[in-house]
Amino acid sequence: MGRMAGKVALVTGAASGLGEATARAFAREGAQVLLTDISDEGAAVAKAIGPAARFARQDVTDEDRWADILAEVDTTWERLDVLVNNAGISMFGLVTDLSFEQWRRCLSVDLDSVFLGTRAAIPLMRRGGGGSIINISSMAGITGQMALSAYCAAKGGVRLFSKAVALECAAARDGIRVNSVHPGIIDTPIFAATTSNERRSPVGAEPIDPQATAALVTPMGRAGRPEDIANACVYLASDESAYLTGTEVIVDGGYCAA
Image (spheres, rainbow, N blue to C red):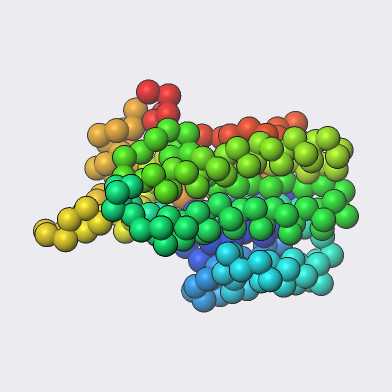
């Protein structure tokens, strides 16, 4: 406990799943945390976490709202040490079936938001002497996945964007580190929702069980837990990873190694 004592963190997409688990882990480790989400359910999560957490509603694709969020962080804490760009969506479908609107929506939420958040956070981090930017990608940002072309494009973009900005910050000697995290199959409600059979066929649709799917394709034979990703984020947010930048942390039960 206390690995993030004195730090201020911003976590997007924090109303549920990986974002919620990460915000909870940060608070347990001593950080002050601003949770944001497009869903107001994030307010209940912040309340459950306790005095160390606050909530603000945010559409991460809205450039102006990013300015508001960073202004709130500055007003409240006068610093930002950690940004986790976690908010995202999936877009399931063969490339020939995807509309351009669907393609753009996926890239806007999953990639544009990472650019907007990173760009907005750097000045405040620099003023405080440095920080850690953690961009949540996916194993689909490492390997291709059938019927997930838009998602793969966005998450692959997050991976290389993170490397490029890491080099910029390193050259600036500003103390800011930038890394990407690549979850595999994680047992969350959003996994079942975004990979449900309904997206493949409206007939006899049943949600896909993350554990059953992972047992078939993951070397470790099971799905991960949200806490597995949160723990990786704690490491990247803490001073323990002070010499780690421009790399990817793959948390996938061995999927990408196979």
